[in-house]
Image 1: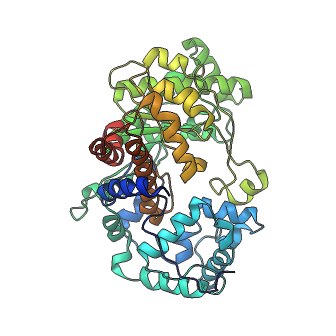
Image 2: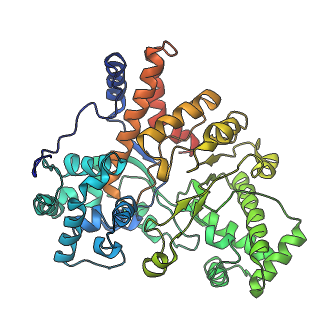
Image 3: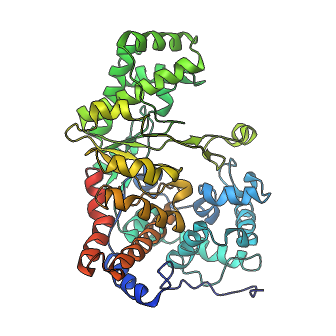
Length: 473
């Protein structure tokens, strides 16, 4: 049994290969990239945090409540999400402390998971915590973090600079006025780069319960009548221009599948009209969405926004949880994917179009080597997205490198994607990726498949050059 106050100490060789010879190479590679800037082209941190630079309120609201990785594992062990602050609004001090105690008392739940790696890195590297979380240490850890949060060097902008973030992408509704982004751009004291990302999922799903209301709102903000199909397409194009004017470089799409079967214009218009009347069937709505996803690719070819696909998630798998807490609280579950035939209509039209970038992510790792890598290894437009969500974990990242590199190489990948709402976990997540890539490259050097100077160059490319090129930064 570990002592109640075991020391929290981050090993300098964590995640590096166990073989001494390979580890020595990996150390050198990691050292060369450890302090490089963080490029984060896909995430969910609100721009208002940085625009307003409002101090973080308490340790739970910062480290626990917004991190669905933490919450879902505890929920799997019988902890109610409400006990972690989910759906509770602003927390009183005792609520926040009680939730933090719950996390610490269940610390064994996170053994062997990337969540533990991220959480310990945050505690040790950012807040200077030196004891392992446990029921006995929960209050001491909480107090130390809380004492930090009232200091100016722990406000959002100071942490942003400390983390070395050069680009931070948010994820935004097409109707968002992007006022927080504009405040940052207009602020002469702000030197960072925060860019919005166009996320139109709900506007493509004609059977959705809010679809007609969403399209009415789209008409109001764009000034374009969305009563017919042509107006709807024009309104989306208008909002994409709005996003580009505010610095956007990409769009993001997440649907159950990625079929892109293109409809005849008259058929697309007919289905759209049925949707506006509330008379569309589920099958018809799916057909319209698949057509509209291809339309999003057409728009990306024309306006230059990078198109990213995050398909294959059964959203809100547990209906009672969704009804009580809403979306994005950890009850989304992966489903199997097929991409080769599903994307063929889109790629037949746009796969070789000049300047088109399509980044394919998946939580079904069976498609890494079978579909995504071969697609990226042929089409100039296709890039293999980094392991995301359930797969942004050490063993999955190692498998990704092995599955993708031999078909597509390193240059047709996306660079690491942190995809997080948990602001303080960003540097820990990127450090994890850098260590794992250093280990993979070190193995190639040890096997005499790469010279070390090539591995050093590749390690740098994976951190900076590749994400900047893929996302046109």
